[in-house]
Length: 167
Figure 1 (cartoon, rainbow, N blue to C red):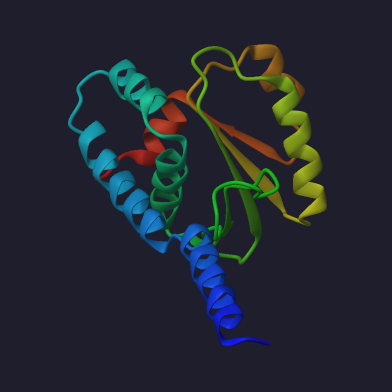
Figure 2: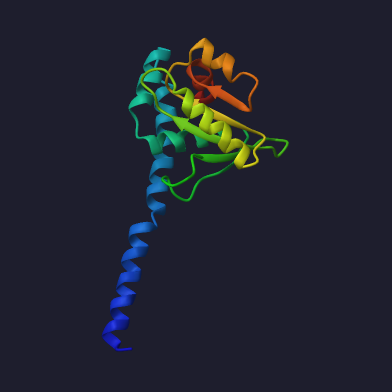
């Protein structure tokens, strides 16, 4: 093998590493998420807070939720990457060490029932005790009733704002 070929392979490896390894992006999104939690808690009207959350970057929204759960005493496991995560945006462990999977969705309207059905399958696949489906949209009474007895806890509206509240 020639020396120039070896240099070429090393350069390709470095380029691949730089394109796929982005710890800075995670740190930046975590920091932005924490800043947004502080910012929305200065807003007076709940509608203002939800509307603001609908407009933020989806990856920042994920990190913001994980930080909020951490603030509430959960142990959190962040994904190493944002895409290709199998529909899970993070894993939480409560005080009893129960595994809870998190899915974060930003909706401008009603939540999609199919997303909930898919999430129900993911909860079973990941062998989690339950799943938190956190969203910025609206959930109809029928949707809440349909998933009431499942392992999914739907968190939106006032429950979402309570999660993000800093006291």
